[in-house]
Image (cartoon, rainbow, N blue to C red; front, side):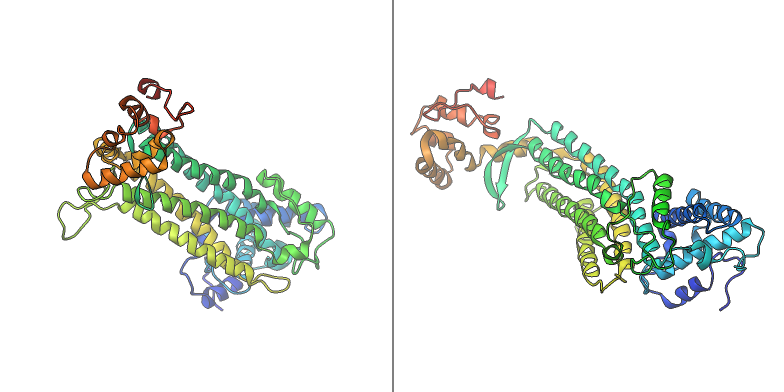
Length: 466
């Protein structure tokens, strides 16, 4: 095959470029993955030099080449293979081996494509196989990239907490099954959004350590064929030193050569975040519905005209686009699960699909969260009077009277209020004093636990409740 004279890749990459026209997305889109491949190859070179398998000049050349890829994206466009490929990532591994070998050759003054001094297979891939180098680099890429999702999620939680504080004094009706339930504050609603995401932030931060297990040195199927007996320990130690991460070797290399459980777990966590974010977006769309014929409790920032035919219509486009991000992440988590399950015997050949989806999902989640926060959450305002009237007109507040007049009488009050349109407090006065009823129906009192006596009378004054 003919290869462009300026290309740093070689014939294995060129064949892959010819064979795989699948996604149209090449490795160059993922700089973290390229850096992770270079870090992995540099760690292997360090180990091979230490155990006496690489001459000093070849080691220095490979180390220089890897640093070129780690420190800059100047040469990343030579990573030209489609991310989805057959061969369990062999084309990706060889793309890295060839680029590094040619950069090393240039460092030594050898023509590009002349592999007699630094060979992609014999030197850059020494003591390795795609089956240990590729998953090790892929795990490291997830670790390097996951920080952007963590940071975006932290900022989202801060924004939701701030809105919760801002809206803490605004009374409104809570709803179950889209029916009136009992009063709450709009602040409580937004604080609950933040709280549900905080749990997932903890999972996201803690479980990335499952990616720290590197099967470097297991080579083809985990038996370490063609690797020096000291290589695995030295390579993982070198990679730990290069990255500052507490990386470790697996207890069972054969199990590790076919296992994708760490990827599966991380994808599950991203899916869980997506499910919760999508639910929040659903709620925002409902709460802002209207403005005349919906809930209209909050206003979302107007970022674009909502219709090509209906003048003045403004749609909740930012929550809608975040919903779609979440659907994509939920769907590709299913793809990752199928790819994980499809492993056969000593290898999972479908790791490229897993890696592609994970890296894409992290990109989409980070961009989606930042878009939702900046263009929607931070600019939300409340329609306080609408919220207040919904409480004043609701039958649901009768629930607050249960401790005092019981379920049967409360049901009668609700039924009469619904039939006649009379206020709940007025009807309930049949069963208790006005002061007792008003104390239980005080807005602030209804949004939290209260101090009651044995009869169910609220012992707090409205001022204390407020």
